[in-house]
Image (cartoon, rainbow, N blue to C red; front, side):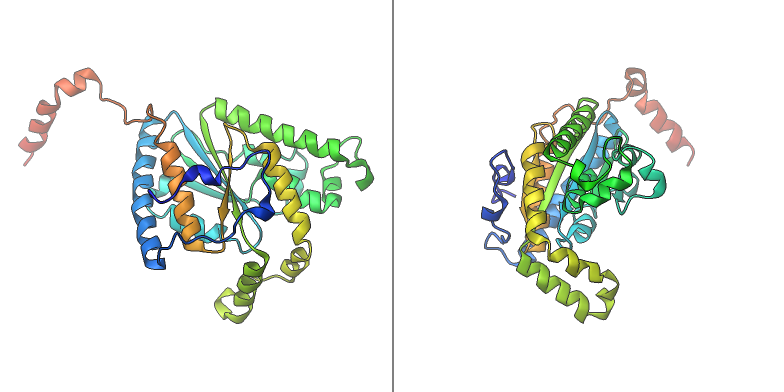
Length: 293
């Protein structure tokens, strides 16, 4: 969309989340935004077909945000026109015992997108520097040598983990994975309204948990941890984009536009050419099929 300047959403080392707006509508109605998304996601779907045929790159889309920030509905709406075989979505919940028997990145390695595929992480490896930082006692479950108590987890621990994540993503990028990382930036008031809707609408009751209210009390801690994670891990090969999320329809259009604009810069992603011998005999093959009539 020509009214969206995608570079405006790119995060950097000086990012201050508090000063970044959480609402945007570009002066467009919901109907206009819905139509804009339909156009953009159709082009994304066509690109995915080409990516699949080209089979040399993969795309990893990472979504992070506070509860109710719209991650699930964004996945549903932005990737609606994709061929089902070309995109896989993974949501990472509390680590299982098996996962805790490995390093914290292990479960993410297992489900990385293969070449030609889009992979969407709905909550990601960044949970390991967000939830665990707000609740450092969770780190003890990882049974890391030298970490015996919460007091053993200092700033160096988190700095090392940021560097581990940077190395993980650098390795992916160098191997042909195109990485996108989106923080859905929600206001505390909008979250309150969305939680109230979950309580008032019977069909949304299943989404509500009392723990949502407990985590909400830690809002400022989470905002600080998000800012620290974003500032320390937004790199050229794996940039963060901060998306105003109070208006879901606009957020979807922004994400879809960023995806399409950056992916189109990969001029080498194109459908493979047929073998010269096959090309030379296309008329013959066509005649064979017509003769079957």
